[in-house]
Amino acid sequence: MSSKVISVLICLFIFHLLAAGSVAGCKIGVYEIKKGDFSVKITNYGARIISVFLPDKNGKIDDVVLGYDTVKEYINETRYFGALLGRVVNRIGGAQFTLNGTLYKLVPNEGNNTIHGGPKGFSFVVWKVSEYVQDGPCPHITLTYHSAEGEEGFPGDVVVSVTYALKDPYKLSVEFKAKSLNKATPINLSHHPYWNLRGHKSGDVLSQVVQIYASHITLVDEQLIPTGEISPVKNTPYDFLKPRKVGSRIDKVQIGYDRNYVLDSNEKMKAVAIVYDKKSGRVMDIQASAPCVHFYTSNWIINVKGKGGFVYQPHSALSLETQGYPDAVNHPNFPSTIVNPGKTYAHSVLYTFSIKK
Image 1 (cartoon, rainbow, N blue to C red):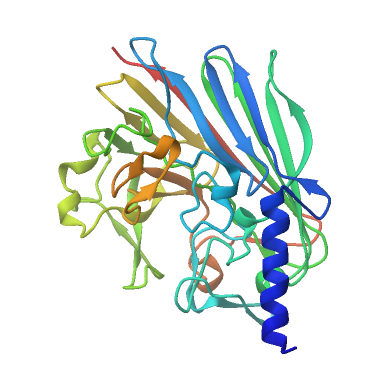
Image 2: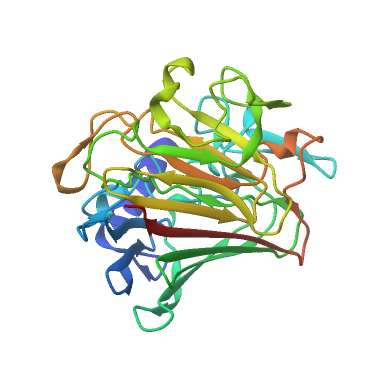
C-alpha cells in the first residue's frame, strides 16, 4: 500500500472519529452558559461559539451569530464560523518565518501562505473541557488544548486555554491564555464569531452602524499579506472613527471590508468598536487588551446553508477579531508576538450588549 493511500486512510479514520463524537479521549459536545434570557452555546470542537441568544427592543429573542445546526457540519468547514483561531491568527506570508536563526516552514492553507494557524489550526481540534458551570451567578466554561512541538510547523509545545463567561448585565467575557513550555514561538489568538445583531437569518448587515476606534490600518498586498506599512484611514473608505453604516462606502473597497485596524488606545483594556442595529435596537460594545482588530464583512460567504436551512450570502454578518499585529513574525517594525519559554500570553475581550430604543 502506498504512503499516499495510507495517509488518505488515516485522514478518513480521524474524520470518522470526529464525526462520531470523540478523538484522543475527548468527546465532542455542545455546552450552554445561561443568565436569564441571555445564553451562549459553545462546542469544544474548535472552541467555537455556535450561538448567542439576546432579546431585542421588543423582547424578541434571536440568535445573533451565523453557524450550523449540528456540530458535524463544523468539521473541516473553511469559514471558521465561531472558531478560536491559532496558534497564530490571520496570515503568515510565504508560510514561513525565521526565529532565533532557525527557518520554520509552516503548512500553507491559503495559496502559498498560512492562515489562522494552518489546516489543522486550533479551529479544527477537539479541546478538553476543564471547567463548566452552566448557570448561577457566574456561568462559564474553560477549554484547554496542548499544541505539540511541530504542529503545523510551529516550534515548541504550547498549552492554551479559553474561558467564556457571562456577566451582568448582558456581558460576554472571553479570556485567552497560552504558555510556551520549551521554545520561543509566535502566539496570537483570536476568535471568529460572525455577528448579525438583527438575527442570523435577517439578511445583510449593510444598514448596521459601526464605529471602530482606530486611525490606522496595516496595508496589504494582493494576497492580503501585510506590506509592513501602517497607513491612516482619514479620507479613505476605511474610516469608521465616527459611526457609519457598513454599506455606506463598501462599494469603494472592492467586494467588502477585510482589513486589520491598529487601535488608538494604549490602555490595557481599550475601546475597540461599537455595532448598532436600528431595527432590533441591539448594540454591541467591544473592549479588548489586544492592539488590533480585523474587520471583515463576510465577503466570501456565498450560498452557505446555515442554521434552520437559511442560506447565508455575502455581507450577511460582520466579524471584529481582536488580535496582535498580523504577520508580525516577518515584520520587525510590528510589535512582537513571540512568547518565550515559561512566559504566558494573555488576551481579554469583553462584549457588552444593550438596547437602544
